[in-house]
Image (cartoon, rainbow, N blue to C red; front, side, top):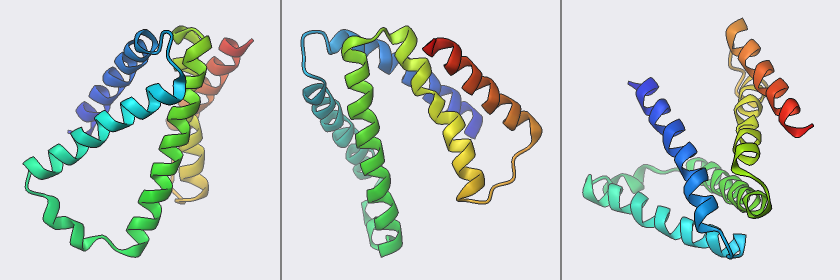
Length: 137
């Protein structure tokens, strides 16, 4: 099932880039990021409340909270820079370069999480990096 979710994530991420580029026209990237974040906040808490999962907040440990907060900071910074790039750059270049994050995540999963990856994953990461280099030049 995770593969379907991943494909849906990729689809909506691609759609996000197009909608964001249209929505950011004539607007400061920081304002655009704040509006987008507010919408996401309401959707995320709406899902938690609708599913009755709000009681599970009690199981969060300090460790969970620390790394979720750090992840939130990283996400926020990613969005700020993404919108700054979209303000002046074409989606056809910004979005693919942003997806270099896939190769970075693979590398960090090996270094930090000690995950084992197969040769196909490594070749895929190398192709993403090569594609990004082609786009940048």
